[in-house]
Image (tube, rainbow, N blue to C red; front, side, top):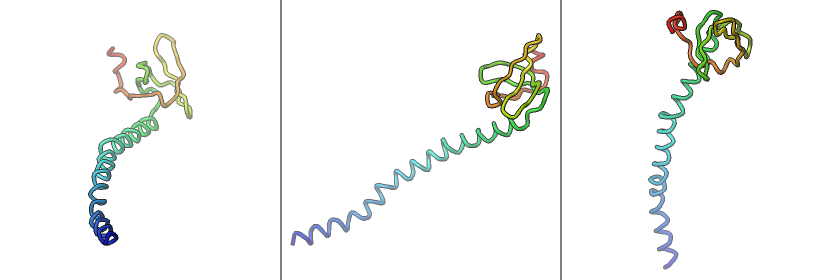
Length: 106
C-alpha cells in the first residue's frame, strides 16, 4: 500500500517540474533580449566604425583625447593632437568618430 501512495505522488509532480523550470527559461530569454543582444549590436557598430576610419577623420579616444587621424595601420593609429604633437594608439581605443570641424570649434 505504501508503494501505491508513493507512486501517485511522483506522477503528480511531473507537471510541477515544468512550472518550476518556466521562470528560469523566462529569465534567460529576458537577459538575452535586455543585455546580450544590445551589447552585440554595440560591438558590431564599433567594429564597423573602426573599419571605416580614414586619414583626416576627427576622433575621440576612450581616454578622452581628441585628435585627427594621420596614419592607419592594422592595429594602431597615429593621431595628430595639434601643435606638432602626434601619438600612436591602439585602434580599439577609438571611441567616437566626430563630424568634420568639431576640433576646430573647440
